[in-house]
Amino acid sequence: METTVGALNLSVPFAKWAVICDSDDVAKMHAAAGLKSLFCSVSKDDPITVCAVQ
Image (cartoon, rainbow, N blue to C red; front, side, top):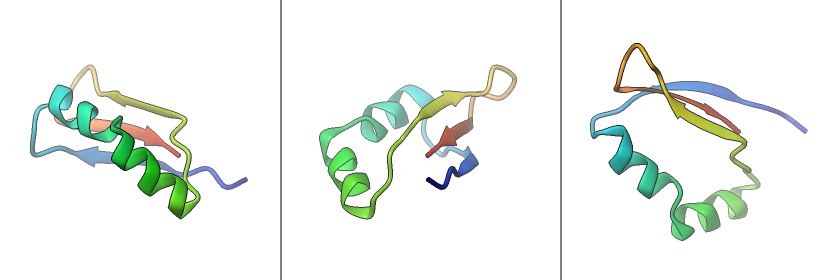
């Protein structure tokens, strides 16, 4: 299994982004692409930076 770690800079608040990221539609899209989200969190030092592990 390949693991990808990414840092993203958001253009919307983390709470809004997380709702979309955790939605059923995005889960279906990820499943179709063979992706599984393992971890996602906002930086404690920068509220627009997200760390995602897939």
